Amino acid sequence: MNFERITKFMDRIWDDEIVPVLTDYIKIPNKSPTFDPDWETHGHMEKAVTMFAAWANAKLKQLPGSSLEVVRLKGRTPVIFIEVPGNAGASAKSVATAYGRATIKESTVLMYGHLDKQPEMLGWTEGTGPWQPVLKDGKLYGRGGADDGYAMFASIAALLALKQQGIAHGRIVIVIEASEESGSPDLPFYIDHLSARIGTPDLVVCLDSGAGNYEQLWLTTSLRGMVMGNLTVRVLTEGMHSGAASGIAPSSFRILRALLSRIEDEMTGRMRLADLFVEIPRDRQSQAIETAAILGDEVWSGIPFAGSTKPMAPTNSANANADLILEKTWRPQLAVTAMDGYPLPADGGNVLLPFSTAKLSLRLPPTLEAEKARAAVKTALERDPPHDAQVTFDVPRGDNGWNAPALAPWLETSLNQASLAAFGRPVAFHGEGGSIPFMAMLGMKFPGTQFVVAGVLGPHSNAHGPNEFLHIPFAKKLSACIAAVLADHAQRPR
Image (cartoon, rainbow, N blue to C red; front, side):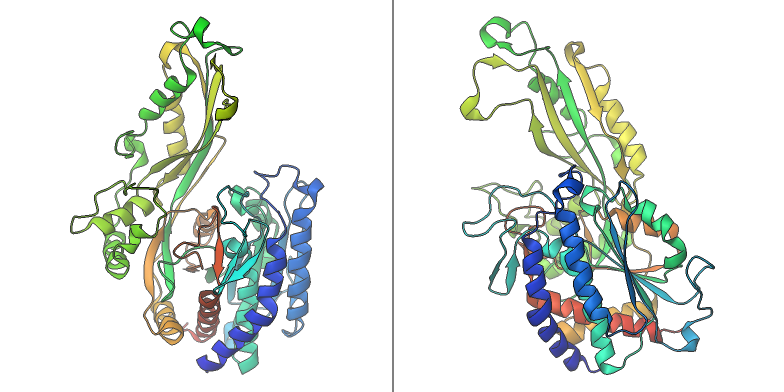
């Protein structure tokens, strides 16, 4: 492989073809179903799917035998399913079958991304906005470009770069879903529906993750699980004048605050439930130390702290940064992400409010069973409420985390060589504090599969928040690295 030619190819296709379509995509408010229950009626998701499919179909004409289908199951968000035949020779194929008639035994790479988006969020810099794309200093600002709209484009660009040099690759299946930001509730049904057409992948490439910096390739080694639900405390059937009721009727907010203290220490932020902790594997502890050595204080200094706010753990000890990494990636944490039952401050009167509802987002260690955590938290919050208040924790489901299997020697070598060629620095390994439900699903379904989980969400890229951006120079290099891995996969020892 001529990596210089790969680099030039990525520069051209990104600048001339990918960035323009991603710019149009950012304009579409195709929020995930959790945030837009009427997504079918609004039509934004359909518009995004149509845009993606049109671009992909035009490019797939350069890859003979390729196919694209927008698969639709009733009542569920659609999935874009792309299949590109392998061209790595007979040694990579044992049987070539028509899907649906037999299990596909050809060597297969499954590439994954999603096109649904998080909601708007307040706080965007003047002149930018979630649906207002802005290209500045090599960064494309707007919702969804980095998380995760670029993934399909980068995957196809990698294949086209190999095609340009006549370099072989295995059979490729690309799955682009539309419910990831809601926890991928629709995806298991599609994976079952498409199982015969997918086959058994021996390599999964997911481009929905992050990077510790923009100076080297980063491989994600773990993802946290998640439990999300609404905690409601109701004390009255209607609001009452605080002069008439306070001192007799309890405050729903005070009770809610007390209930949260059962699972979280309000002074330190550390979780209190033993059921939410796991033993952190030694290799992940070692990787945290190595990552901290690379990033230094950037582990925490890139976070936009307000005023004199400091990290939750001290930063002056020998392993402080490594410990902060483990707090973010292997230990449980709680965030209150929304509240209901309260007027805006300008509209608040002297009224004792009838209820308080807090949306709780609990991040779980990668190896903890989400259902166990869900049950433990629900029990802790609902039992014996103060003043016998009406308390419910509505938490319909949890998502398991994921801990990557050990890398095969060929893949570790390939990733390192690709990072050195693209960046001049070796590959680095880190855990992520977020969740990609599909990875846990695939890890259980295909226990022998190798994983490359990477992404463009580096420092300040701020996925889900204001000022989200796609770092285009990094995305180009990541695309080139994926092309190199696909080429090495076709030539790996068997």
